[in-house]
Amino acid sequence: MIDRNRSLTLQLSWRLIWLQIAIVLGLIVALTYTLYNASVTYIDEDVTRAVVDALERDGHGGLMLRPDETLGQLMASTPGLWFAATDEQGHRLTHGDVPVAYRPLVTSLPELEASEIHANSAPYVLTMRIYVADTSLGRIHVIAGGAPLSGPGVLFVKLIAYLGWRMILPLGLVTLIVVPWLIRRAMAGVAEVAGQAQAINIDERGARLADGSVPRELQPLVRAFNAALERLNEGYDARDRFLIGAAHELRAPIAIIEARLEALAPGADRTRLLTDVARLANLAEQLLDLQRLGKDVASLEPLDLVTLCREVTADVAPLVVDAGYELALDAPDTPVSVIGDRQSLSRVLTNLIQNAIAHGGGQGSITVDVAADGGFAVSDQGPGIPVEERVRIFEPFYRVRPSSKGTGLGLHLVQEIITRHGGRIDAVEASGGGARFQVRLCRAHHEVAVALRQVATEVAPTS
Image 1 (cartoon, rainbow, N blue to C red):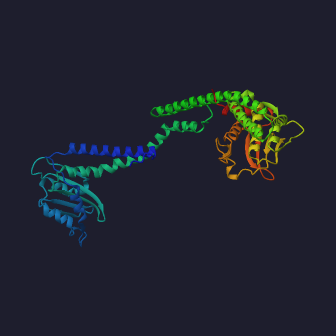
Image 2 (cartoon, rainbow, N blue to C red):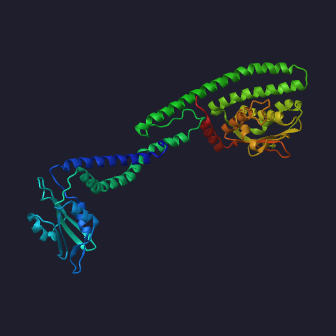
Image 3 (cartoon, one colour):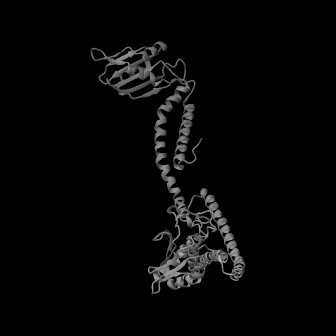
C-alpha cells in the first residue's frame, strides 16, 4: 500500500529520479540503435582487458602470458584472435597473425592512446581496438583484433556501464538537493496559511485564509476551507438567533410562574420552586448577556464591585435564607473599581450563589468575599468539588452528579461571561471545606480599560 502521508518533497524527488533513470535508459537505447549496424563489427573491451590481466614479467623483465582461464577460453573460441602488447620500456608481446596494415602501429604502440577501427565488410580483419591501462607492470598498451562482437545487446550494456552512472548519479544528487529547496520556496505560502488557520478562534466570526500566497494548485483547497468557515458562521448565527429568541420567549412565562409562586403560602415546597424558577430565569438572562456582550463591547465600563455585590446579595438573600443557609458579605469599606458590564456580572454572582444553594448541603453559610485587587469569591460549606472535576464543571452540560436537577449550563455561561470580561474564574476548596469559586476581574485603570476593550473585540463574534 502506498503511504500517502510521506513527505511531498521526498515523493517528488524520488519520482523525478526514477523519471531521469527512464529518460537516460531511453537515450541509451536510442544511442544503441543509432550506433549499431549489422554490417559493422566491434571489438569488445573485455578482450583487450583479458590480455592485460594475463600479462606478467618473465625472468629477463620482458612480457609473457601466464595461464589464464578467461584468456584461454577466448583464444580457443576465436582462432583468428591476434593482439600485441607493449610496456613503457619497449618490451613487446605478440600473438596471432597481425594484419599487415597494423604492423607499423605495433612498433608505434607506446605512442598511441585508446581508439577503435570498425570494418564494414567481411571478413572484418581490419576491425581492431587499442586499449591502454595502468597496471602493476606499469602502463600497458594493447592492440587486438580478430574477435568481433557485433551484437546490439553487448553495445547496450557497454553504453550503460559507461554512461549510466556518469549521468544518473549527478542528476540524482542534484535532484535530491535542488528539488527540496525549490519545493520549500514554492510552498512558503502554505506555512503562512497554516499559521493563519492555527490562529483562528472559533468565536471569531469572519476569519478567512488568504489564498493569494499559496500555489494555484492549492487555492481550491483554501477556498473550500473558507467556504466551510462561512457555513460554520452561518450555523453560529442561526444558533445565536435561536438562543436569543428562546431566551426572550422564556422570560414571560417564567415571570408569570414566579408571580404565581410568590402568592403561595410560605413553605419548603414554595422555597424549592422559587429557587428552581430563579435559576431558570437566571439561565435565560445569561444567554441574553452572552449575546449582548458579544455584540456590544461598549457595555464594558468602570463600576464599583462592592456596590454591585451588596445589591446582588440583598436581592438573593430571601432565597438563601428560605433554603436554610446564612448569607454573609465580606467587602472593603472603600470602592473597588473594575471594568465590566453591570447586568452580566450581577448575573454571574447570582448564578454562583444559586449554585451554592443547590450544592451546599442545605445548611451552613454562603459567603461572598470582595477583594481589593478587583475580584470576588463565593464559598459554601457543602461537600466541595473533587479535584479532578474542578476543570470539567465549566464544560457545557457537565454535572458532577448526573442526578442533579441542574442543566449543566450555569457555570459554563459564567465562565464565558468572565472570559469576555478579560477575567478568570477558578474552583478551589474553601477554608474549612466546601466549594469556593474565585473570580478575578480587571481593575478600572485607563490602560486596562483600553486593553480589555481590545480583548473583548477579539473574542466577540461579529454579526
